[in-house]
Amino acid sequence: QPSKPAPTMAGTAASAEWTVTEGIDAPESVYVDPDSGFIFVSQVTGQAGERDGTGRIVKLSSDGKVVSASWVTGLNAPKGLRGYKGTLWTADIDEVVGMEISSGRIVSRVKVQGAQFLNDVACGADGTVYVSDTMLSRIYAIKDGKASVFAEGEQLEYPNGLLVEGDRLVVGGWGKPEPDFSTKVPGRLFTLDLKTKQKTLITRNPVGNIDGVESDGKGGYIVTDWMAGKVLRISPQGDIRLIRQFAQGTADHAFLPAGNVLIVPHMNENKVAAYDISDALR
Image 1 (cartoon, rainbow, N blue to C red):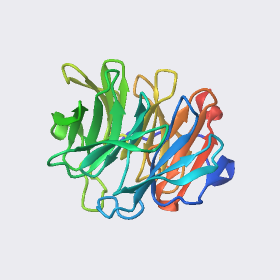
Image 2: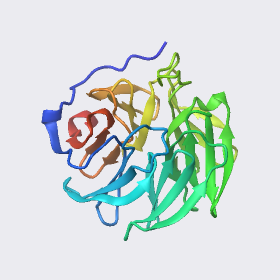
Image 3: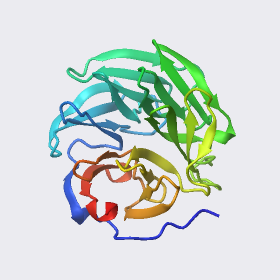
């Protein structure tokens, strides 16, 4: 049985530090560039699996003001975002796109043969970009412009959220998706050794339909459950605590430990909002 997270204070839109809706259409992922402080938001803008050319990346200031509603355009349905040495990477259905953070210029497009639903990205210390394919229960590695299968199989629990932490990849499982993306058995949080690919569970029981995975800055993790609209804190020992409850569609968030600020793309509500979650981290 899925473990029941103990409820704590629930977050509401009213408790947001800032909210932006202008130019926001089906936001999926948020990434904060540590060098400039700018916030980048991927926008599916349409159906999550549709090659319609309407996807784009929005650039926000650190206080949530729109700097450019069309910083990068012409994508299909961009999802996960992660930066590495001046390049912002996104997963776009069946290709991984690299954009120069300083200019928004597309500098790399890597087609991933056979991919169905590329979802989140994470960057290794050596520049390898790891990308999850939730539909195929597979993780690819992109290195020197070439894609290869890093790991695959049902044991990956149809992965979505990814985070590189030292010599391991932290993986948030969605669980095997039905046609409507619901699951009979939700996913767990686990790690894969980057060298041996050995799986180690962080949570023994199912957690939810995990989307975003970020470090809480204290050895644990903050994850979102997209279907249930939950933000959860997971300790290094795998204890789960509900820290915010929202409507369905809490997608791939960013977390800034310095100010305990959580930035959530509310995909179904076409908004991005920032929350002070200091109360939940004491």
